[in-house]
Image 1 (cartoon, rainbow, N blue to C red):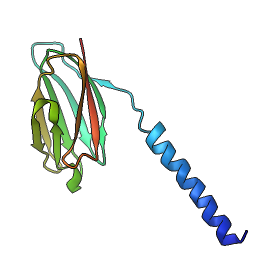
Image 2: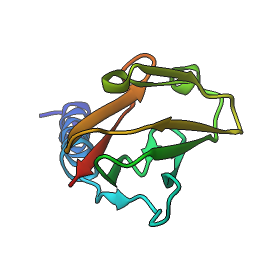
Image 3: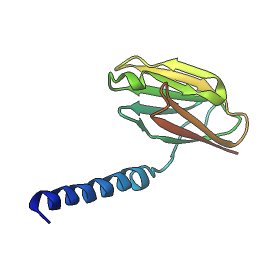
Length: 127
């Protein structure tokens, strides 16, 4: 095996390891509970920068929710957020906070994503 073949093989192994780590280990994030015990909506701030942080949000079913998306980038992929289960599609201006409000009627898992469907998050409504 030549030096170039060995280098290509090693780079391939490193790339495979990185892809597995990124999709199977780094993608498992803990859910963050929304704040709000009073009469107002449950609130949580979500930073949009190459992804959603936090990407998984826990809320109480049957209570209003207010997600405050702060888009800290100008990437065109993240200029919209879509919550298909609630019929919401909202433009997120760069470097601004945009509130999205809805009420999950039943416990369950609800997805949200960018307009292209590449950047994803999840809302877990519990009873």
